[in-house]
Amino acid sequence: MRTSTTRTSTPDLRHELNGTHPRNARRVGLRFYSTVSILFLPLNRYNGVTMVHPHAALLQEFQISANKLVPLTPPEIVEEAKKLVQELSANENAGVEQIRQALIYVGQKEFPYRKAYEELCAKDEEVRMQEIVLGKLDASVKGKIEAVTTHGVHILDFVKSSQFEALDSSDRLAIDTAVLDAHDQLNQQCDERATSRKASYDELVARWKATEEKIQAMIEVLKGMADRDPKWHDEIVGRARQFEEGWSVVERDPTEEEVQKELEYWARVLGESEDEEVLE
Image (tube, rainbow, N blue to C red; front, side, top):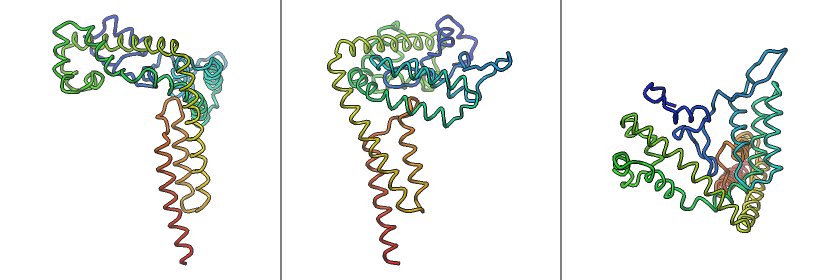
């Protein structure tokens, strides 16, 4: 959040308190989440003294994500995610690897529900976002944005640019507030759409669950390839680990295409290594 004293009005204070400033927001599925807020760092108590968990920032990301799993995610997954956050936050010995494994575990479970939710809602979202924002601005501010967006620049890219920073503080505040309100409106519309089309949603969940299982099976094949040549073992294991970390609720999803390319690459490398051994 910008620290300028000219931007201390109520809307910015709201962003600061609930961690939803639009230019700090990052997308997870269709939901918008802020970067970590120190207001909610997980705390533990030792002998009456309150202490910050050594991995509080990572736990806070987990907490935000667990609280914002997409609508229609089964309640048992939501509750399990929240329970894991609580248990890890209460355990001062919980390390980064343990927390990351929990993130991967929850993310992989949520994956089919989130992808189904996205597919129902995301097709026209960028267009609707821009329409909502422009509709909330007065003519003078709207004209300044349209001078940029008419050339194909999306509103969310504009607010991260130096051109946005060049606007005066009142215009920036008006745009920030309109973007935040548009986020909320789009999220509500997507919730309603997914609920009203539950049958379609369930079909999409089944399809994405099959995709998740196929991708994981491909990752397991990649892991198995590591044992074929000690020379490449650690590198292959590392690549498989990177793909699995993609299941995490705070990372980018692994894709079938990416894992397939990796399998094809290592099949060539290992085939060449085996050919060299035969020649020797």
